[in-house]
Image (cartoon, rainbow, N blue to C red; front, side, top):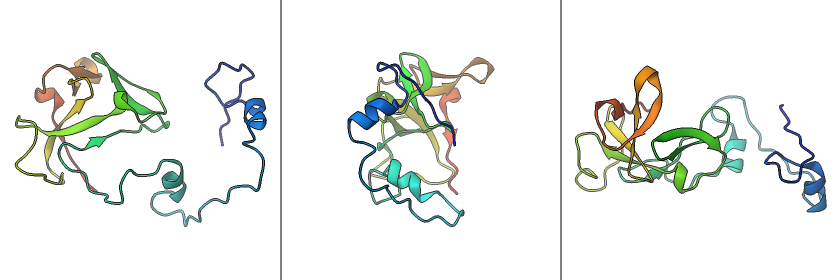
Length: 151
């Protein structure tokens, strides 16, 4: 368990005094969901609920991508980072067919093996640039085509 600590009231890290002052530490403790250790941790759904009961993703749907340290991929201009724990507009991407156009005919589910482009909120596309650095390009070229693999 890793704990970030700060005493500065303007800091982004958790502040014990402020949490205590706002009553966040009062009342009975929250019980954690039971987990067998297999599959996804059920606490994930408690802390970051899915927007829908339908696990399928369709072309044109907005999605957010979380990295291993809990932040979400965001795009600002041509720059791609993962610096915020938010799932807002800057962290939103839509799946687009790699062959061009905005969507496939009708509302179609994304399937394993599909080649897609990921369009950011600002109209730029995720792509792999020089030295494997991810960037946001104005056009969806070959460096911005990704093959979907579903488990």
